[in-house]
Length: 141
Image (cartoon, rainbow, N blue to C red):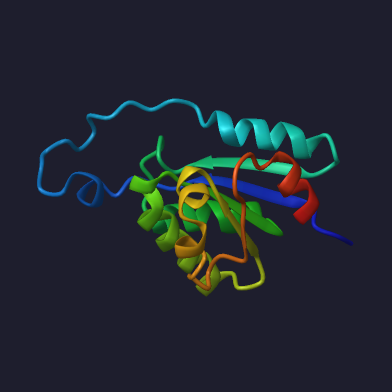
């Protein structure tokens, strides 16, 4: 039995990390995670069961996001992140590795593409994806 269940995550915003002491909490806009929707559609064609958890839009805490991941019982978690969300992605990945150590964690997105060597020094990430992730993700799975 191979890898079958994949949960794709947009990490939550940690407003204090993004905005410092400025009072911009809740001001930003939210768009659907088209990158994750595209990845889910692509790998679903190969028979994988996918779930998307948008921690950013739902304003989940790391604890709530971890609960969502545990409920979906994935074999693999894919996390996307921009530079403002990198520390949040790192926190989420560390929490997953601590609570669910057998889950493979794949990280990608603009921050990883821009700074791959620096980003992948963290042991909580098993695989890093540079650039568009559809084909790479399918090869890793």
